[in-house]
Image (cartoon, rainbow, N blue to C red; front, top):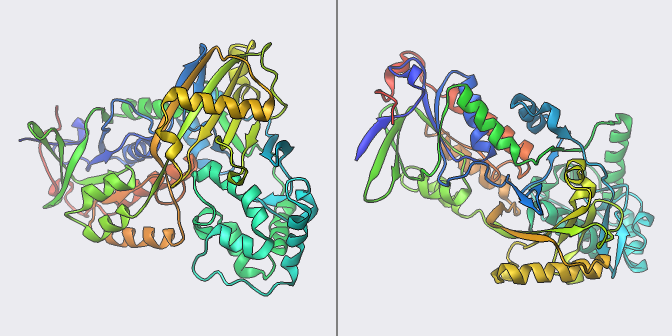
Length: 490
């Protein structure tokens, strides 16, 4: 087995700590960048041949589009700030329209206003989306006794107890499903909608709590965009960050799976390569920016309790079916697209009229409509067993039923994200806290990514920034050469 010490060649001999980042998604790339900022020598290892994780661009009908995440929450600063740092400031672009619909009760209906993750302050705002009985049920909330939430409770359980199942089934479910591809009756209120969890503890009435949240927002109104995209696709972001990492002296190796991780005096040994030709790398510190199952396998020997908790984190799979239609053959409704409540029994859970939502897509080819549709939900993924042709046919069937569009696409593509979205069930934050307590016992090790503090891009960037801070803060004081030493080379 060939051994080497990883890091920036300029730091060989102990001038700077040597850190290996495992995982080349946006979290791993951000961690690498922040470690370089802090003076570490950094090598990033990615198992696949592609960087970017769930951020990826491609072409449909000659038009460049996102085939993964398409937008970033802009009212958190981390992702937009990272894009600017990576040279994409001029490419940042808000949606051209944020007017979405619900496809429910056999019609496209405007998305109700004045709600917090589907929970309304005014029952009348859901007329048409809910039955008359469902609207009337919301009003009962103010007379009901307090619903105890304890340390955590499922979103669906709490909201249904306060304002009825119809609110959950027809509004909360599709909104949460667009983020987690999960089930509202399993997803943690504390982890997924912390502002509602806080309101549940402060107020007896949920609708009063929502009104209080809205009053605080109204007292300090914001006019900046809620979301932001990138001209050319959000998939450009990790590639731009990778370029910045290289420019600052970091090393990036793709096609390099890590199969083993072990503590050694003063640092860590990683095993890569194949069983027939293993390679050993030594480093002062390691950041694991990989999905929870992979982190569980790597930590099984050194931190078995953390490994066991990580192995319990479940993931949902999904697929995106992206179409390009000739605009003169496919008249789309106004707005950015629609969400679909699972209770309506449709195949697709959402559709985005991408050319309407993003100016940069429409400007590439004004004669085409680009439409993204998605399927797949946690523990309800049988549909993903169909081949690509079958998924495309089912998506076209639902598009026709929802919009009337029956044109033949000029191009279509299926992107599968197997085990792509971590689930945040009741107790998720307690599990994450236990994992971190165990990892803290192993100085020079940190975890980051979508499995811990949020699945959105800003949350992943923040998670990576904190992981980099942790491993640098845990660096032993004194002689920087006290850890693994040697030449950092190929």
